[in-house]
Length: 416
Image (cartoon, rainbow, N blue to C red; front, side):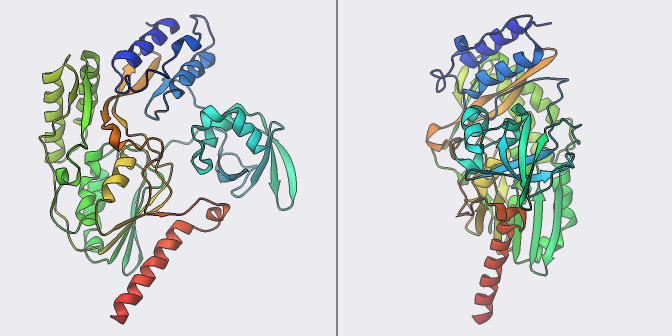
C-alpha cells in the first residue's frame, strides 16, 4: 500500500521519465510548488495532485481516488461572453435549461472566472470547463423571466453514463448518426450493419460527435467507408513527417500491454484483434528502449463509396481524445464539412495508461505526435465555425445550418 507522499513522489518520477511530454513540459514541471503530507485530508490530497497536473495543460492527465464520488451539482453550464447559462438540469430540479447565472458566491461571472482560471483550462470563453469550476462554489444568483433568486448549491447522486450509438433518418435523403464515444467496437459495427440500406441510399450523412468521450481510433474506422468516396489506404492520409513517438520505458510497456489485453476481452473484428496483438508484440520487443519512432506496419484499407455524397460532422469542445482524431481524419475527405466549434484538443500526447496505487489511480500518455501537428491549444478546427450562443439552448443552430446547406445543394442539383 502506498502512502500519499510515496504516490506523489512516484507521479513526479513518471512525469520526468515515463510521460510522453516530459521533455516539452519540463519548464512547467514544478513539484516543489506543491506540498503533500502523509496525513493530509483526502480531498486536499487529490486536489493538490490535480492542481500539479493542470500545470501541464494536457487533458489526458488524470488523478482520482477509485472510490471517490465526483461532485455532481445536478446541472451543467456554459459561458457566453460574460454570461453563464444553464445548458442542462437533470437532478437539480430548482434550475431549468436557459436560466442565467449572474453571480457566484457574490462575484460576477468574470470575477469568478478570473479567480478560478486554472480549472477553467482555457482563455477562449466557449471552451472553458465551468462544470468543474462551479464545484468550488457554494451559492449562485439566478435570473429567470425578469426576476432573480438565490440558490445554495447541492450535491446529487450521479446518473450512470449510458453511451449513445444512434442512427435515424431526418428525411428521405438525410441520415443522422450520433456517437458519444468510441470505447466499444461491436455497437458501432452493429449500428452500421442494421442501417446499411439507409446509409447506401442517402445523399447526406450527418455525424454528431459534439459530445464524444473518445476510446480507440480503430473502432471508428468502419465509418470511414461512408466518409471517403473511394478505396483509400489509411496510411496515405498522413504526411511523411506526421509521425508518432513512443516512450518504451519498462513501466510504460507493462502498462500499455495491460491496456491492450483489456481490449482483447471485447468482441472484436479480425482486423482490430490483429492490430492489438501486433501492438502487444511491438511493445514487448521495444521494452526498455526509451523514445522510438513508431513504425506503423499495420495499415487499414478504407473501402470508400460514392454514397452518401455529402458528409457533415458536428463537433464541439466536448469532443476529445479519439473524438479529436476522428474530426481530424474526416477533414481529409473531399466530401466532408466539419461544422460547429473546435474539438477539445487532447491528442498531442496519447496512448493513455493507468498506474494503480491501490486506492488511487493516475492516467498519463506514453506516446506523442510530431510537434508540427500539435492541436492541444486549439483543438481540431471546423470548416464552418458556429460560435456557441444562448440561441443553442432554444434551437440546434448547428444542425439547422447543415439542413440549410443540404437544401441549397439539393436545389442546385434540381436546377442542373
